[in-house]
Image (cartoon, rainbow, N blue to C red; front, side, top):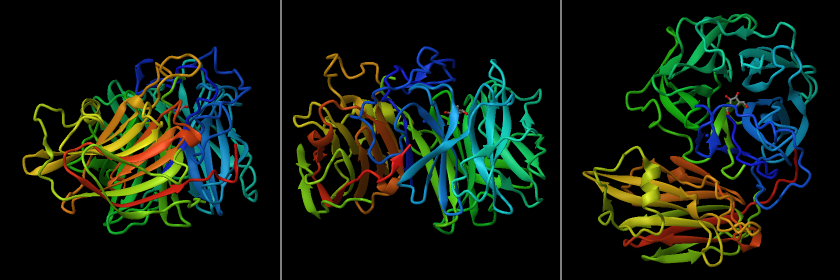
Amino acid sequence: MEFSKSAVNWALPVLLLSCFLAFLNINGVEASHKVFTEFQSINSVNVRQVHRTGYHFQPTKHWINDPNGPMYYNGVYHLFYQYNPKGAVWGNIVWAHSVSTDLINWKKVEHAIYPSKPFDQYGCWSGSATILPGNKPIILYTGIIDKNNTQVQNYAVPANLSDPYLREWIKPDNNPLIVADQSVNKTSFRDPTTAWLGRDGHWRIVMGSRRKDRGMTHMYRSKDFMHWTKAGHPLHSSAGTGNWECPDFYPVSISGKNGLDTSVMGPNVKHVLKVSLDVTRYEYYTLGTYLAQQDRYVPDKDMIDGWNGLRYDYGNFYASKSFFDPSKNRRILWGWANESDTTDNDVQKNWAGIQKLAKGEKIEIKGITVAQADVDVTFTFNSLDNAEPFDPSWDRYDAQKLCSQKGSTVEGGLGPFGLLTLASENLEEYTPVFFRVFKDQNKHIVLMCSDASRSSLMDPKTHMKNGNDAYRPSFAGFVNVDLKDKKLSLRSLIDNSVVESFGAGGKTCITSRVYPTLAVYGNAHLYAFNNGSETVNIESLNAWTMSRPLQMNH
Ligand code: DQQ
């Protein structure tokens, strides 16, 4: 891939913590690894501040993309990430490294991995960390060995385990560990997962790949982590999905709420396989069964395995990686909130109470810094009778198309209702995040939208629509929620140029990157609104200003 449509040095992707054909431009992100030779080594002198995020992880300057090998080790969280030390577009990629003890404040340390050896001289691409027995971390990553983009899998280990920040990493000379054989597409063979240990005592990893249009995860096994043998068949594959990047494969408990370590198996365990589809630049996941004996993953029957499948996030979100945090028994997911543009909670206000929003009404949420805030609202309604009928000719899988037709101002029955975020005083600019409920035979369909199409008006300098080539769609997803309580909750984390929203407790998540020109800093406003004929109640609304971390030293 990677995208960026201009070389503006402030246009940096951010990484989100929560719970994205040859140079074809999809979702505002270029597929395939496009190299902007003219821009990739232009150092930033002035970094524009206006749309920089306040509390989402972002380096002080230059390009970042995928989170790499996140891990928790001896009380410290390590985040590695694909980074261009020389410019604001993809290129010159190294593994930059930041450490934290609370996931809020971050300290930048030395780059962990950078091209220096024949087995990675053309690039150090994404990968994962595994903690080996004896409490020894090891990183597997993809090295690019030639100008043809040939991909191999390498490893790196900390030089000094007693350094709490693991600043220096060594790439031993027995690299590469894995080289593609004849059956593997060697330019689509990357992003090794965290390894898991089978009952036979052998480690397993998968890499993203494709055979023609069939996306797949090639599996390799090893007894000693140094010698790897390819399994006779992929862990999983799916026809017509194109190249798979950044696979993530991990167990989830069906009997409890704790996260599970990557090698856990058992009767109350299911598995998640997430893949990043290079063609659409969106991420899809299925829930299913890992048949350990056969080393095959089988998605559950009701899962859709491909473009129309479930997504972690229906907006600007790609190349995510999860890791198990043993200190809190949770699994943490990091994702890359790719840019759409051209190339301690500080409690200030916390109010609750019932407000009614009749048709066409909006209520301003005041008293907090709404450009950098956490807003959590629960809407209730008395009846579902007014929900609009779901037209059978509509595509049930194309939520985004439906939202672009039925925006926040198009009157409905039950909905649209929700929040107008990053709104300018006279609503020249705003990013609405909202629900619309439809009736479909005996059930209801809930649509959630995060509409960036009116997020910015004019660029004050060029007097053009801000980045008229910016990707500003009406992101959308359906919300699989039972409406018997006649309730829908919405939480939005607003961070200057990020609107990260969670519908119905996170059943559907949408991240939008937006670049307002008027609704910035103290000039941003926030409203709850209803443009449906059915009155909607605000059962509770809590809103907080979000501070910047004390340390964001990248
Ligand atoms: N980005 C990395 C690749 C990965 C892609 C290169 C996904 O390893 O497939 O920067 O965004």
